[in-house]
Structures are given as C-alpha cells and as structure tokens.
Amino acid sequence: MRGIARIIIISITALCFVVPTISAQRYLPGMRGLQVTAGSVNALNLDKGFHCGVAFSQYTKRADRWVFGFEYLEKAHAYKDTAIPQSQFTIDGGYYLKFLSTPRKTLFVSIGASAMAGYETINWDEKLLFDGAIIRNNDIFLFGTALTLETEVYIMDRLVLLGSIRERLLFKSSVGRLNTQFGLGIKVIIN
Image (cartoon, rainbow, N blue to C red):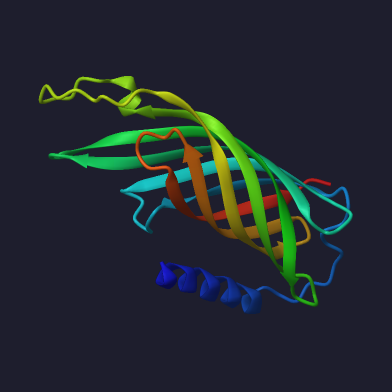
C-alpha cells in the first residue's frame, strides 16, 4: 500500500510542475463544485474491484468544504473459474478540512470524514450458481463511515484534478466491512 500511495503523491507533485502558474482566488465561501471520480478497490487492479461516483461540494468560510455524493462500488470474489460480484450503492455526506495548500493556491490537500448509507447485493440476488451451489448471503441495507485523504490540483480556475485515498467502513456488509479506495477524478467549479 505504501507503493501505491507513493505513486499517487509523486504523480500529483509532478502535475504541480506541469501546470502553469496560476494566481487566483480559490476556496472562497459559497463556491460550489461538481465532481466525478473513479478508481480501484483494495488494489490497483480494476479486475478485482472498482468504484465510481458523483458528488457536490460547497466551500465554507473557513476554507473547508461540505461534500455530498452517490457512489457505486463493485468487488469480484473468485469462485472456481468465475467471479461473483458484490455491489454496493451508497450515499454519503461529510466535512473536509483543508490542511495544506501551496502559496499560489494551485494544490490543496484535505482530510474528510463522511457518514454513509446504502444497499449491498451479492451476485445481483441470484442465489443459485452454475454448479448448483447456493449463496447464503442476503442483500442488505448498510451504514457506516469513510475517512478520505484528497488532493486537488487546479488546472484552471474552474477545472480541478482530484486524487484520493479513502477507507470505507460499512457495518452489516456480509463480505468485508473495510474497503480501501484509490481514485482519480475531475471537479468543475460551477459558480
């Protein structure tokens, strides 16, 4: 996991040198943004799991932000010569504290905590497998929390690249309560 985090940090740092020097006002109270993110789950191998999501963020007077979003996560569990999908649909809302920024305000690093709720299905509720085996896990409603470390790199005043590492803890999940997400995304400032 240290190698993955190192790759993300080096990539974001390199972007800071490639991006032209921009000097603008950012993280102003009331600013709003829409973001789309996607990435892998528990490894950098998308075959084992992936996630994608959309979110809305609003910046506060203290240069922090509220984030509300919807996310889809899917993990593949190996069974004989096939994979059984575990799918989660979640909504979340949380608060992100900015704790680092560059003097020119092109790079921001934030840490956030979110409350989550959603629904989990195993093999799309098909209990009988091809070989006659039966899945005993039931579809279930989930609740929990997530802790996120997110980096924002401003390409233009209204266009932001995102990189994140997120740890989700969802109680009642029948197949693994903890999931680490590695993601990249893009945010558009809408006002």
